[in-house]
Image (tube, rainbow, N blue to C red; front, side):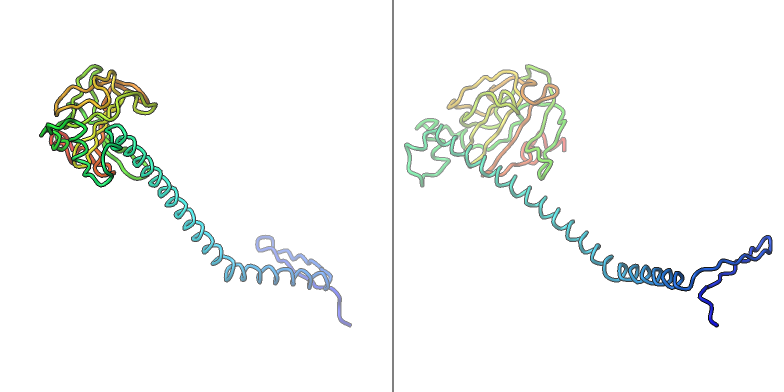
Length: 249
């Protein structure tokens, strides 16, 4: 007669004693099936689920990368839009409505400055607006810093990097007292965090003219000048343009 029980014999290695564990055959078969199912599930997970999980992780990383690129693209479009608005504002300041839309921008600057045509207006930014230690350099990308910071003492003179026309002279939340000068050949220079402004909008300046006094206004920690150079809507590194700053790179 067949037994309906399964026996397991355990022999202790140290004591040499034998122990017997009896288990009902049906319960043993259930337990055996359970372990087989667990092994099958583990095998399926290893063969199917784990590769899928790896693919999911890879897709997730790609999605995050695309989202980061989309954010950068949106920021770029925002910057371009701001630059376009600024360019519109600048042209309104110098009287674009009085001229045909096809007129050369350099000629427009000269006409706004005066019919005599100051030869200094054809110069590009080349004079360091202030001497000092560069505490923060130009950075593009997500950590953008479209200019350089030059440390100095409050009240140090800030001079125009080139001759041109002042298109903005006033307060902004980020750069405090700020001056923006338009030059020929689509150059624009920006001077931020000034303590005091010495020029007004639509005022002509020559290279080296005093335009402001160095300060610590706006979003700033410590007295310094934030200086930017733009050319045809693109930010340039002043250390690539200004001879005095090139030596400090």
